[in-house]
Image (cartoon, rainbow, N blue to C red; front, side):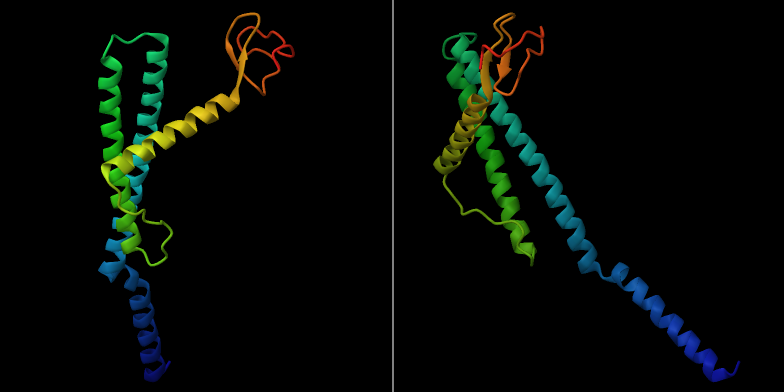
Length: 167
């Protein structure tokens, strides 16, 4: 092998090494991926928290209807949960806005900034949607044991009684 061929091989090896190492050396790209990953994780946690707050508000409402709460407790608890929900919605809006600002693809749409009343209205809409979805699924109660059943059930999950008469 002559000297010229050896130099060409060494040059190709050096170029391929630089090409392979380039993504690891580009700090902006690495930092952007880490930042986006952290934002997505935070957004996921906030969405889970929003669902938890909505479930707590539904339980609170059910407890009020059943008379399980002392007088005045319902309003205090409801305000507490609504304020927590407002904070979560605000954080979600900030994350969506920052992801949109940092993203060139724009896969998340930033919501317009709204007042505190707007956040509470959004929570009320989410609660109303959940109520409607729950009422559409409900099929009544089992005639044998009294357990709640869904419209799609043919038999009671608790006692196995036929539900043809319920539907």
